[in-house]
Length: 488
Image 1 (cartoon, helix red, strand yellow):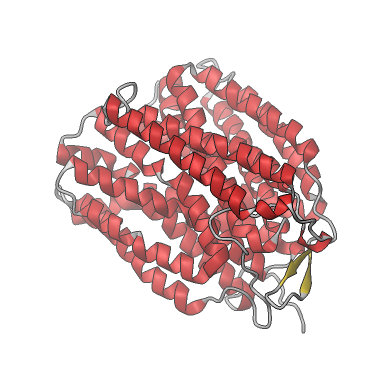
Image 2: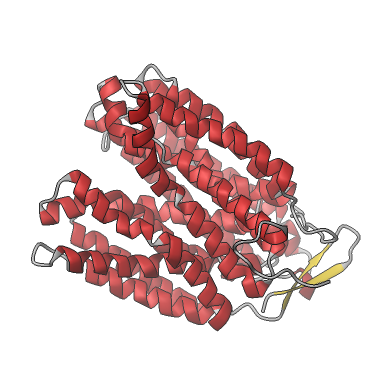
């Protein structure tokens, strides 16, 4: 059988899957970030305070961290076709609820639920890995993520215009409602036009549901350790909602959430141990093994790359406005140069990984990440606006290319666990954003950038423990037959 060429202008076979998948991801980000560009109109409609606005922004990301892990498990179990379609359909409901809200409490509840749609990214990672060979996987994953990520930028420049077209005080409701309709419609389009894997290929499902499989006692210990930062990020979000932050939660309610997080973490850890108890009694065959250390390194890398991207996108307009004495609109336009790089940089990171080696490219991009963030920390009003923008764009290149390079490796570790690995790595990106934004809220901008640079240095060191994916990975079907999947 002749392998289909990689042709961006084709809409058949694997290229159809890629275009529909980045389209689904684009819509999830369009819906996820549909309130931010309309916040001034929403605030005017409900007479919201500054703290209430901050609360809505925090709630928008609160559920995404655990959602990425849950959705990753569901994807490996039931397949990306069903899970992506259901996610798009179900998340249209809180989108409609937000558009129809009549109180701040209703806005807050709907916004909290909408954080779940931010997990859509994970599903496409598994779908793309099923359809593209290893030699094209980095580029394909980069295009999927980079183009899909542009949904947030599309929301920023299109939804205010749509709101103005409908006019009056309810224009924002129609704009947000339309994104919900688009999500619901695309759920049916995706379900009827894709399949989980190519014809005559096997979709390998995870053996366990509810916990990531590991194949050694050491890996089980490392898995339990790697869960801690995720729960810590949820505790930080709770702290932001407590009286120490925006005061949406009382001290008693915040303490109750802390207690619940501890209980859930304990149960989660016990569940992981229970489902992986075979590591204490069984010696795994070579074709069953994988090295969880690989996952841990990728988690750390994504903490620095995507975590810093989300954090910097949130603060950059204000940083430009204060540093160069600009209006908010002008500062926002200039700051968008950081996010705009996603269209090219993330695919570039994946393409470079395909061509020149995944580990070596990650070394180069991570070192560039550390150096460029250190340089961004030096920006002050003595810089020209042009030089500041160029420096920020250079930094953005390393950030987003690094993200592309990370997810050029994720699908090459263990095929049947790709959704869960992508979910955990994605969750680390959100955890990084929470951590960096917390640093930003309690210290200076310079220290904020220095901390990100330091995390990149730590990621660079962690890379020495990663093994370059080479040769083949193996999977076993339900009949016990072993399939070799080429990864280099």
